[in-house]
Image (cartoon, rainbow, N blue to C red):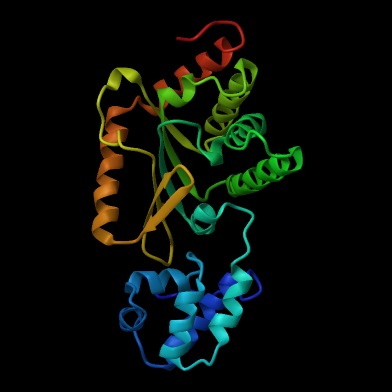
Length: 279
């Protein structure tokens, strides 16, 4: 793995803590793996903290202060990184997503957040929280659109999404909203910003029938896989797990339509949605 890069402490509290952690660890003469043993985590996890990929939690911060003899520095300062505009189960994954250089995602039930148009996001959030006040829905939509700003960069991250046909056929927010949602994806593809493949119903059984999958790679930290369910989410950094799910993703891309055929399908559906009934 390349040596750690210098982090700009002014860029975010998490980056500052990552830089301070690396400095304190090196001053103590410990490798990432050695510190990980004292924290009951992997060396990869320590590397992700130092690279500002993962959020420092109080229980880990307390152990770091003991292991590195830093008083209560990390425990006190980790509170600054705890605030998030995202749900608790997704906050750490959103942090990682913002630092990733490559993201590969399979979406079985809905268009993933980074590809969503605002009206589609609004319909999804309203479905999640049918009795929430409008202000709360507006805040959720704004947060999700801010997440998608990582695609404003012309080259990074690489975003490769396999969309299940079920996500495209489920009429979310109405047919006009679906037409806009698919047109938004088409526009991202047309400007060479994302790679999208559609996994059609005709593909039959496939390698990820058990649920959604997101793989994230980083310049200075080990890769992560993220699993998400209803109101829950989990990041995994175990190398064997990441390798296994990368193979799962490879099987998905092999079963899906090519990017070219997927684009044709998406464009046709975007044009047809306002006018025709879909099975």
